[in-house]
Length: 247
Image 1 (cartoon, one colour):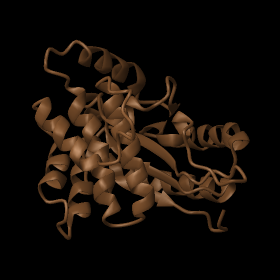
Image 2 (tube, rainbow, N blue to C red):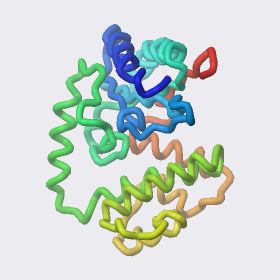
Image 3 (cartoon, one colour):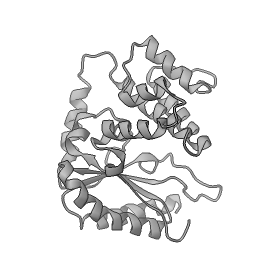
Image 4 (cartoon, rainbow, N blue to C red):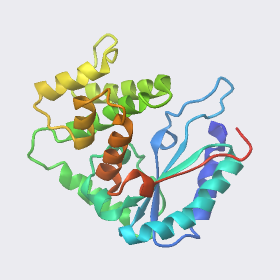
């Protein structure tokens, strides 16, 4: 799949998701933002990331049953890995600073029968009025430590690059835009900002920063991240389909 195929991809998703019930679905990740990875011939190598929102944990199984054929047909038709992270509605509305929400485009919803969009917009507006000291910082640190943990488990080159990108977002948020190679030492940057700004990291970040070399650090961090972001653990939330004919 190439950039010119994205409108067809979105049309396919909207059509397929219109036949599902009981969930709203948003496009997230690099395909939503436009900063996806490509090969030299322009073929997109980044995954498709969907965020399906369901009302309660009791609705997860039905959502998974409906989503799996949508993910597989999308993977097969467009030659791309299609993923989803099922998210509980209350959790989504209570964590408006989570990176998977703040990095969405202005109009990310592919289907919204639960009317999540206006309520999430209201929650985001309310969050801007908070009086606490820069509450964005724990959520900006979270993806950095997640990708550093993931790099200990698989594809260190790609995941360290993602951690550096997330660190750049953190530094930009703090106004550090003139640094030379500011993300060469990502873990040290995180701990320095934590200490300088008296940040209380989210449990997933704290787990990585405390025991970065533990054998089970990635699986532990991953489950904590999904609980923080989606309201349920990785096994219940995460879905993926790969092309039956490789891209």
